[in-house]
Image (cartoon, rainbow, N blue to C red; front, side, top):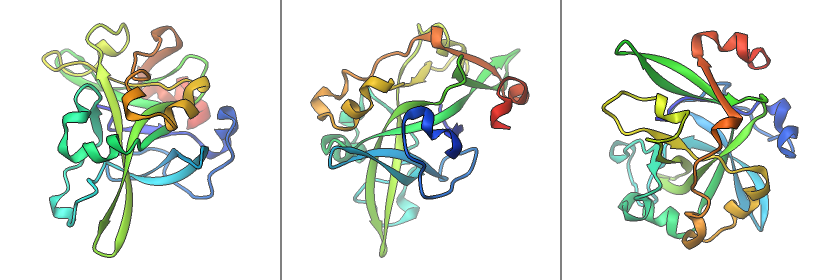
Length: 214
């Protein structure tokens, strides 16, 4: 899940009370793309450009890399390739406009966009990692997810036989808290978002619902 999304537009970062990042990125992203993220640097929020799909810090060759673009928050501490980032408190935020998920209708997958009802951008929880492959240092990230079997909105997505999963929204008042928290505190932030604040529409019709992004 959460393998495709529209990151925040550069001309809309003021809605998150942020300065505009000094780098460019695509308007729609998939695993292995470069994506804008926010991390904490000396207690302050800083923009970074990171690969979508976490590369373990011990990786030595891209051929060994599994594209870890989603992480189950319930078991992240047990995952060998993710323990380093988690234990080092390498928490990030991904500012997004819309996240796309498959909704199955008559056994056929249809991509739907999930977004705030007020059309404002929002931030979701992630972890990040630095790895050196050859002589190149790579910053990468992975989206944290939680079970959504009972979430009124998110339980609509993914195949019927699959566990329902959801991204984790970090609200405005807790963004710095999340970026600067200790891994022993992190799970306090990993909670369901309010379904009343979000809605969804078919991706093929998103230009009607979110013309500001198209």
